[in-house]
Image (cartoon, rainbow, N blue to C red; front, side):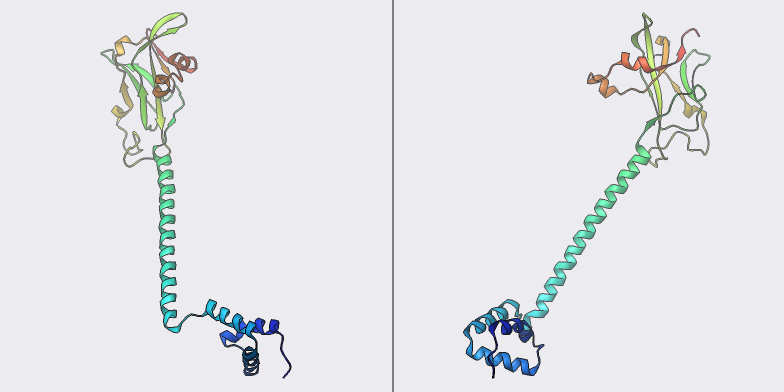
Length: 221
């Protein structure tokens, strides 16, 4: 028989080990292995790398499947957690994120009752919250006056835990009236958004807020 090159035998070895070669090829490889130590060594190495005992195959596949199922469960849990966080974030933004309602003389009016109590009356459809300050002494046109600031907020949707005042069902007018604290001391009311935390941290001031505020009521007028 003509001598076969080792390189050819080594190319065939994986197929030989898997038992997918013809009978003639199998005999050729076995004959070569009898006389070639180099190919014998290569053959043993390949068998060692890919050999899985029959009795361990089922256990191995069960372990692989178990690990894969566990990995899928972990990935699913993480995905569900991230999705929940995103949905909660969207819900929080839509329901609880407040924006200022721009002032309009048609929807916000400052009124007095028979007892001369000063109150804000909201004529719009709905609002989420109203923010009012106690009167504070500020300089207006060179004069010191007691000023109160007010503004209303709205949200993008009704909240089940923090409902908008008037959800469009039944309007109770008392819900739209807000009495000013220390009303007898107030000289003027301005509509303006303010951030108490920024003012406390000296990042803003009442005088700056007054510059952009809208005068909506003045004593004696």
